[in-house]
Image 1 (cartoon, rainbow, N blue to C red):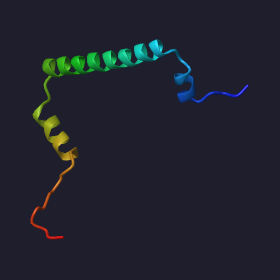
Image 2: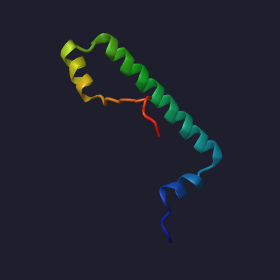
Image 3: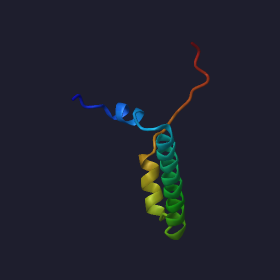
Image 4: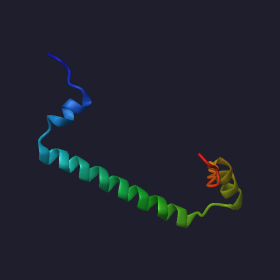
Length: 68
């Protein structure tokens, strides 16, 4: 007996089950984003935390004056 890959196992599920898995994943992500927003409202970031996040964010410079 040969073992199936994860994709092969997923594809062997009935279509209705795959749809339910997809919808369940989307619902889980939506609830997670809502909970994250609620937590952020309950405990807003301090000035120090905002400065730390600003240091970690990438800086992107776009120079439109360069000629090719």
